[in-house]
Length: 360
Image (cartoon, rainbow, N blue to C red; front, side, top):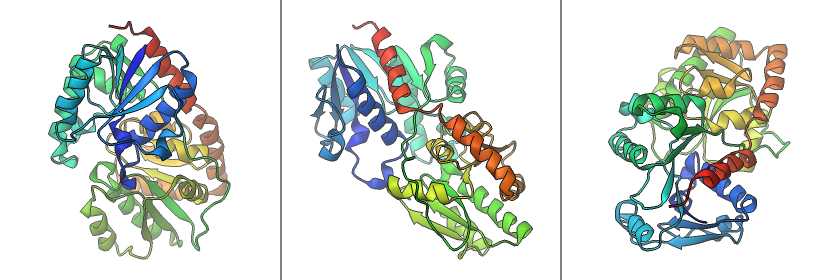
């Protein structure tokens, strides 16, 4: 069969955007290119996918660049699918163009429905394109049971249309760690409003007051969609010398930050999965999270998940994590639980779905 793929995410050149969906698309296609020896793949994009990315894919994957960028998903891609129809189409960017092919649509989360206020002007666009995907897709894939339940509930779907497949882990190779003068907690991800970073900083301020210990809080991630309230809460609590933004970092450096951290802090409003939590756990780093979206499901016993989004509860969890014995117990559980998350397994599950979809 010929498999068409929305690989537009891989056209991105800004390093700050190579998170979340980019990671899922890249790793899925890399594994599929080696796993699937029967089908050929057309990777549609609005700009050429760089050689530094394509070199990871097998000869069964061909990049097809469709121009112009304007109207790419609404006009140019549908036209290509009409003129040269693939047997199956994978909508990997949480959107699905009109097509005569059998379709598999990917939905990563529905945060924009639950908290449209933190998504700004993009909330309406995301809601429209996701509803369109639901209406068009023969099969829907998501990345956690929590997201699967959200999708079925919000769109009134039966379980046979929606499959949950856990994604994998990328940055676990380095045994080195970042050496800082003071121990630190870590946040990893885009520094945008959907991550609710201010509540984590407020919790950290309370933690410092409770313990009177010289800790730092490191924020690792790009600010393509900056959240001005992060700086405001840092200034409010006078934490300019305790909270540091290190920006986007490469996977090698990120692994070092993970391995040196006391714990990863995850506070997103409605995470579909939270790749940083899984990556930290694979490095033996416990996770401190709020029970929202998929976080409790992903973290499990690999950290402390507080029931309410309250800074004091999160601060108390930080205090507990400074106990070496307690942290060691969570660390061992985190490593064991992280083995659930594998890109090879993820790709194999998607391959099975592709194989079961009758070609049009």
